[in-house]
Length: 511
Image (cartoon, rainbow, N blue to C red; front, side, top):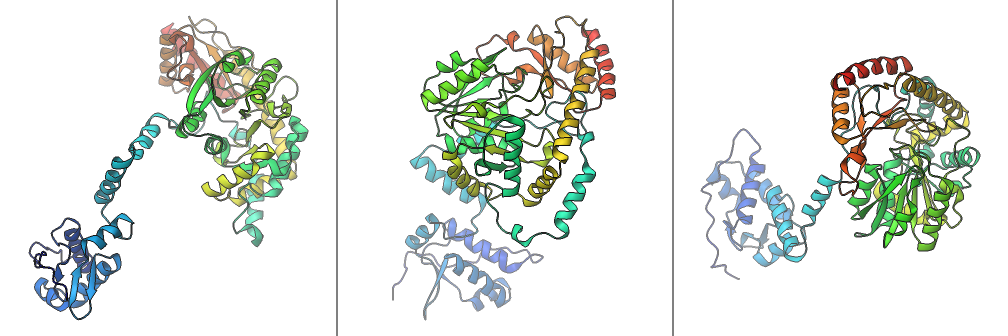
């Protein structure tokens, strides 16, 4: 029989146990730690359970449970007729490196993993944490909506009684076929209704098979980053623009390239100058945050760029239902004949953001890839919200609610326009608002913008600085980035008028 002359004899000194807590677990942890830090060397013979129990003043059962756990995790081994030994070093190191040992302390696990990565590749954890620190969503505004919160519709007008009745009806007698794992693309009945809605109201010819239900528009954008991008790819984003989209692309390792926006939308000449650009993200119906609508020549030029270069376009139609002059514009995707546009829509601006319900219309060639990616990420969407929304649409509530919301938003916009202060130095007039739920107002310099925002906050009014929507590496002068962004749909007209009175008073002081 092999003898391990190099191993020191077992010494129970230093094993101190708290009698008020589980003794077998404490003993297991103490022995395991001694193996990991080398105090119990490879091949050390451990006392028999009866002997160790006597040394430590424990019951034999406590020692046996501790030994059993160490056996299970591979720290110790039994030699027939010869007792219990610490596992040979070669065996133990193999188990540790392949993850067979369980229950390592957090510090030791992190250190082992980190050391391995440093020896073979850059520290991916540090890199990921760096991305998260730089590219993350700011904390959302909390509490009940107030003037002039951006990004929320009129919660006070949603028919919650109808929604509650439909929700209760679904759960009163749910179809067992809906309670298992669902299609990653979403419930077919809802996708069919969305396709019908888009064909009739937006002129977008699509089928249910091209539609994928998502947890809001942000998940759709993140899926695009996951499926379409590789680390190092260039992505064109509007500048100023929706920073959360840029964050999603950057988290995927993409290099963001800001493309200026003017009164006709994204500057396609500047886009053409961007080398090796993989995709472009745009908000053509109502540019976020400037509010401009992309002109038809720009839309055609953008599509021509995508077709010529073999690139992708992500069209975020976040509030396309809100058009106050004529019918809602046909989406960019409705003009696409080569399958280069991925259309993103959301119910959050018609119902409420907490619903977390959005959708994508995908080019046919991408349907399978996005389905696989979503199945890996979240498997499928929550079923009751999808089915209730399908009933909400099928019974006509959705279209009626859109008409009501559009009328209310127009009325609230008019209250804002009528009460907007015109005598504040450096502050622009209220522009015409033809679409959407927010408006951008000009300010002559950055210092004034910051002062106006701070004074609004001091009297309990939310006003967003336009400068926060620009990429940090923008080449435009700081004063050219100044402005105010105000939402006008979140609260009734009476509250808007009251907020304007407080705002004028606060701003006249600084004027």
